[in-house]
Image 1 (cartoon, rainbow, N blue to C red):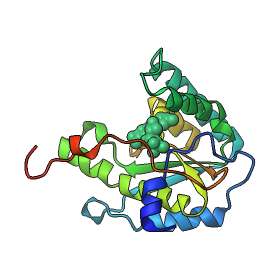
Image 2: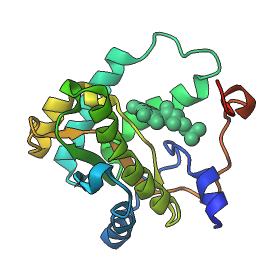
Image 3: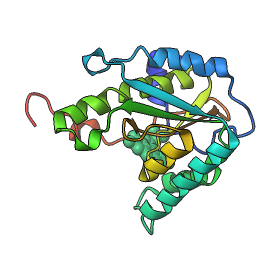
Image 4: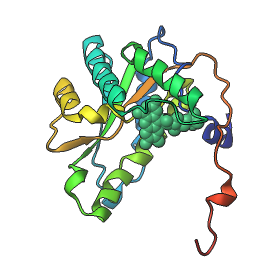
Amino acid sequence: MTPDELLSTTRAVRKRLDLTRPVERDLLEECLGLAFQAPTGGDAQNWHFVLVTEPSRKQALADLYRRSKAENDPAEPPPGKEKMMDASAYLAAHLHEVPVLVIPCIQGRPESLPYMAQAVTWGSILPATWSFMLAARSRGLGTAWTSLHLGYEREAAGVLGIPYEQVAQTALIPVAHTIGTDFRPGPRHPRDQRVHWDSW
Ligand SMILES: Cc1cc2nc3c(=O)[nH]c(=O)nc-3n(C[C@H](O)[C@H](O)[C@H](O)COP(=O)(O)O)c2cc1C
């Protein structure tokens, strides 16, 4: 796979996660090794990745995710988003069956920080997490960025023994081998509406 193919076909994989095939620890370590090459603000390298494979902990996280989803989902899918909402419902229903749930964390709690420090905090975990997801895709693994469990972040911290006051969870990434490896670029807004050269 060329770098351009990797960058254009790393999609949110939900229905094509192979729930029956374990994910080899060596593959995950390789992905983490690449993630740890990402930049951080001030070179703080203040990231942590929690990899959850234990069935009872996955079940507890999936229950929190589903509770938050039920509270946050719109009553009807927004027009044009029916397919995405269907895939999202499938992932929620099967989340506890996904072989590995990865929770990227960052030291410190962003909510009380001034805006610039918040930006540095999020910007210090996003590149590493996306690198992990790209590395996973290049090894035949599927991932999807999810955020819903953060509605119950404190409870999830309790499930995993994460020190909530000192460490913020930023996402929950299901990881599994994909069913087939052929993925296509996704539908995106036309660039000319979103790209601004020299002025807005
Ligand atoms: C910050 C962020 C939060 C997201 N949270 C969720 C989520 O909680 N559950 C979910 O199923 N998808 C979630 N997504 C995935 C998006 O809904 C969207 O489907 C995806 O980014 C685009 O998928 P595609 O690349 O396959 O087109 C999230 C994506 C991002 C970037």
